[in-house]
View 1 (cartoon, rainbow, N blue to C red):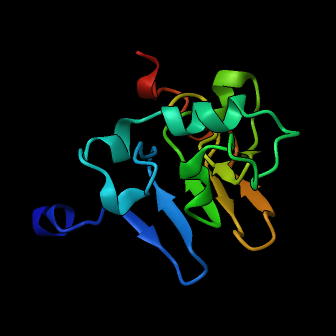
View 2: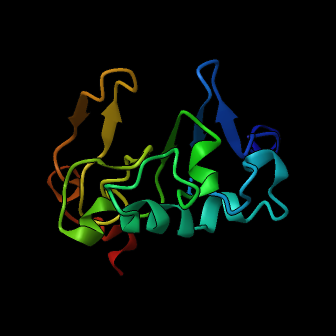
Length: 136
């Protein structure tokens, strides 16, 4: 098991140039030019950038964040949507956050990345009433 975990990739880019990464990245050139691997699992600035982006700003604008232009879509977790009072995946710009708080009291979510249809479990406490998760 240790060998399996030690050989896991930090991210995946599919044939449609969609990025899958736990948290984010900071390089304006994308994940291949990221200088610190910890960014892939700790960074929240990618998500914060997508949340704060002026929705009227065209992706062709010189003011549009360059790192959002590198990939067709970016799928992340790490920052639960429940932090914002939302129990479903959140999509801002081309960033889709599918973390719906299962490590706390939320649900596990799976998504069809082509249609954005999603399915969710019941909230964690319904399955594991004595489990505190990260609520300790």
